[in-house]
Amino acid sequence: MSNNTLKISKKNKLFGGVTNGLTRIFDRYLPDPLVIVIVLTIVIMLACVVFRGDAPTKMLGYWMDGFWSLHGFAMQMVLILVAGFVVATTPLFKYLTLRIADSARTPGSAIVIVTVISLLASWLNWGIGLVVGAVLAKELAKRVPFVDYRLLIASAYSGFLIWHAGLSGSIPLSLATSGHFLEDSVGLIPTSETLFSPLNIGLVLAMFIALPLTNYLMMKNSEPVPFNDFADEPPIKADVSRPAERLEHSIWPALLISLLGIAALIFYAVNGGGLNLNVIIFALIFIGIGLHKNLSSFLEQINEAVKGASGIIIQFPFYAGLMGIMAQSGLAGDLAQVFVDVSTADTLPVWSFLSAGLINMLVPSGGGQWAVQGPIVMEAAQALNADTSRVAMAFAWGDSWTNMLQPFWALPALAIAGLKARDIMGYCAVVLVVSGVIISLALLLF
Image: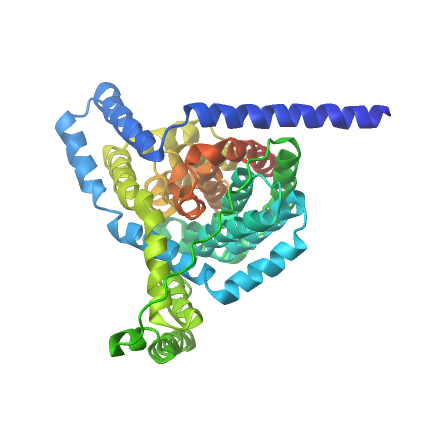
């Protein structure tokens, strides 16, 4: 064996040891996300009372006020999960995934393909990215022998890391929109200086190389846990002898309402409507109805999809309550200020990245977090004469970076996959470390 081969073998063993060790730790000690958010809520309440001197009654008020703040967003998440699942169970989508699976003949190729497609989907739109990768991963797991199902889902979720650097990134889009809440202080910052800046494009390209490679290396050293591809129960044939059943199974109601939905989308686009989460959900619903060809089949898949949405329904209000405490108590702003105080013009982007990553673990909402931290980091950028667009994008990357350890955003993927957060977080932790090193170095050196 040559010296080079020996070095590579040792590196693989070291990488595999770290990966498998993290996977075992998370599998053994990471509780359900609902337990995590409840523990965090209690800890943050106590911290505010003990270290800030806030009254316990105020904490309860902040918590209860925030508890209801994400209801609309939670419903959007449920709908995008359900609508995405319904489209994924259509004959056309199953055919497409089968063709992709035909090209993924080995576990390694399956890992790389699902990572790249998830990265691309998340860059185009974060709502699409949350669903497409997980659905594709599940279908690939059924067809590619000996692939680690946990790693496949983790690879799909890892693509979500770049959402804030993509076309639906809330911070860069907000800064480019007239009337945003920081316009008086920083003005309008065009996307040419944020999303399409050389730094951001370079980081996105780096992730398209680093994440598939990282996930592939983890596959080489992981202990495969395959997907149990149990045979589906044969569908019970419905009685279509009555007029009501014939109508439910008829193509015409489904076709007509689907065409109306698509026509509405075309009218919306022609009149200058932009892409947002509601538009994506609307499109998925009516595409799903059309591709299922009848309302009976569509409703059967809706019922199946809703079973996986329980985590989103109950956990989002608890995270909203935690966000309410962090924002209204001022604790999130205090934490951000600590990072700002140790910064210079050159290091502010890195500290902005790290502070956003830390607070994202407690306030897992890009828009909500920016509302709390944005004024602080932008004021610091101006005071230090730093590049505001660079600082803003560093913050955006930090917000999406620690999503790899924040189970809040993994819930849709986990619901589709039928897994627990602890099943994938060991792999996601490795992605967090690798991507964190790359982003930090880029912010410091370029």
